Length: 288
Image (cartoon, rainbow, N blue to C red):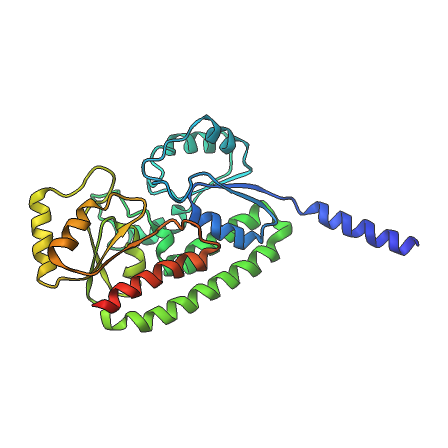
């Protein structure tokens, strides 16, 4: 009986050493990514529901309590969560572990055409760039998780590699599909899918950048004129945004249009989230 007792004791000892982190992510895409990387051995919860717009989300007292009690907070950065930034900065200065995913890609984006020396703003929708995910974001999240909980390093690494392999396969298939459309332009209500389309050499033109900066009547007329001349192969609104302006362009110019979801309402995992949007993109582009 003694060997059996010793084995049971060893199993209990190993199990107890695997500490379950309490992780809060600000937006759903990182919630989905971390659920897969951690294989749910950590407690991952979501702060901003995917049906809400993180650009204008303001935390309540319950949100602040949740953030304060977390072992780790994962936020996007690049001013995506503008009404949360002050609180997150305060928590970080107070010793709370806060990961801004923007830190993984900041240098590479600032050295590219995504910013200029006179412009600090960078498009914050980095989770939709497959190349950014596989090269920087997923490896960065995995490395930081391993620093915090080294006992699960193998688990994190194995799951991250599977996730990256799946995304690389999607990227390969899309590269072939989008090849005939390289150099073309797509009209967007909001620039969430900028990095996604950029990966395949497709340009995007957005009707507005942030909240409250919808185009003027004069600007809309110019966009409608460009759309009628065949400048755009498709148009896309977004579930979390005001799509009134893009509806006007579509109605006047007669171009194919659908709505995308940059945050993944009701999606079971990150692959499901990407594929849902890819299906809608292909449906509209195929019409063209």
